Length: 298
Image (cartoon, rainbow, N blue to C red):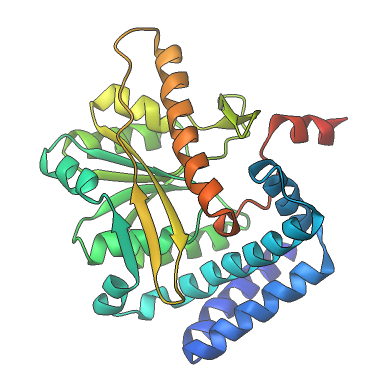
């Protein structure tokens, strides 16, 4: 029953928000964000705890301001995402500006395949639609399985309607398909800043240890594809900005594990740069650092 209710609520959100006038949807998003922020629930408190690592010199009042802005940014992501299928190609083009885009376009032109790896900043779905519609480049991504299964199916159908090829997060099968896409010169986009499994790669992140997925680094090693970190942030009201960071090279020496560790740390460093510059657009309402995970287990 709970799973059915969850699916129904998401379905209502997609249907109702899509049909609303845009100013009304934006106001609704801010109202929901402010209400959640005032209630000081688990997600808001976790966001503030995470932000305290990102902005270590911030006092309690500054952290509250950042978490309120963060919740508004998070709800902007949802309001935009619900409405994206209705956006015209011109609207999408006008809504995104990317710095150092040549790193992506030159990489694709080389035919070697490109992996874009992003953290949970701003609206990665909008960035994906911009890639397919403004650049005319299809890409493949991976979606974590959600409960209920019907909700996962909604997300897959939604992203496929936006021009993305979506694979289930199912270990080797997904990895093999991604590798084939890259070897044929394609583009793979992965949100890759949180991995709580035992196979996650430990990195230093804002001075503490966290785990991130090793998949992007392993794909680059296996296929020779270019590995590019990217970060996003909201600027003025109607535009989202982004930056394609310098490529992460495969180390010339070391074991596979050592290379993967070094490359994943390089991704973490690029993410940290973007998050530190725009902490209010970091949508991390879950535990991330190992110290917090261990605290929960004790």
